[in-house]
Image (cartoon, rainbow, N blue to C red; front, side, top):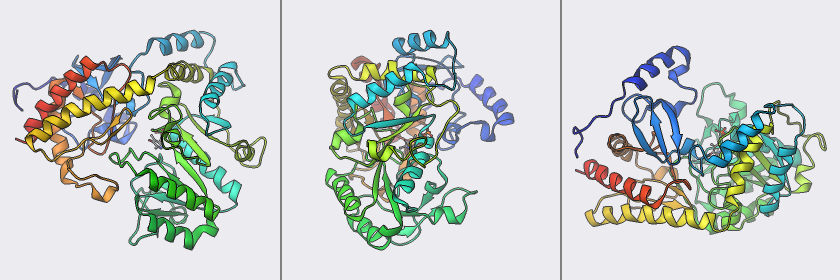
Length: 436
Ligand SMILES: *Cc1c(COP(=O)(O)O)cnc(C)c1O
């Protein structure tokens, strides 16, 4: 099969996208969905079952985007669906405490040894925003150190990139962010202990926290050495600065206790999202009893939410997480992902393609390089042109990847070995076109 053999129909998606442009900026409600860095109109998906999604033109795809990570159990998981339906029948939200919230809180805290207390919110961004306020409230300091190449949602003070130099004040990457906010953020590169050392030496007395994705997975998959993460932990402790692990992607993904458990590193505050809601809008932040004691109504740090911990979202999260604590769940996920990636890797190695597939647990990334990539400035933008061709070829063959080469792929429990073999074969075929 070659580039022109088969062009899937996209007429209905195209028409719906044209219509959507009248209603939403760029036709979308979240920017990457617009397919700006790949070809064709975005696909309008009407159904998902297991590891497959179907678009409005009735094309079917094996899905590795999985709603950007939440669907670790695949689409339309029966236990989540039934629990949600049962709950919805009794009403969707009361704005009061409810039993399902207790059950989800208890399940998480019981199986996650790095946290004592948790607060539910409604998105990952909200979790991060609240965690920053908490860190500032606890320390009485205001600056934040973040790493270039880590994404933490669309929080004002974190939509910043590094200026010039090793440890610099942030420059905002979005319009509408006051310079004063960006100035509260110091941006340093990943994998460079000396940059962190310098930033802390100069600014520790005004810095509330260091925030990082312990598994940076929003700008490629920039897997760090455990020794670097340990160094970050140690430096934060030494300088009286709190460490926030943003585990919105890695939480409940690389293990039930996320990256904290995977690397066995104790952060001061953790943030969650994505998987925690079983496909519903849920986020959370969590920490020790002592730190969480600063949150209202116990303490002076205010944070609230009209729909926080509503029963439907809690039911979905509970039905999802109950399946993740089953024996060997994460081992099996990691094994099948590794096997899938290795098949493709071997094919590429035999042909001498310049490509590699960093992976951890059930997360993988396609890097158009044979170097190990640990920081965002090592990513060659030329690889994104190759990704564009790959993405197109894969859609023709029935495989759906997130529409950007900077995005990672997710394997779900619903991807069987047979599904993964089928996908691997299609990926190899498509790579032959990419490298032809
Ligand atoms: C997705 C993500 C966020 C933002 O979560 P939303 O639910 O999209 O607001 C924050 N941090 C990380 C690490 C993420 O992957």
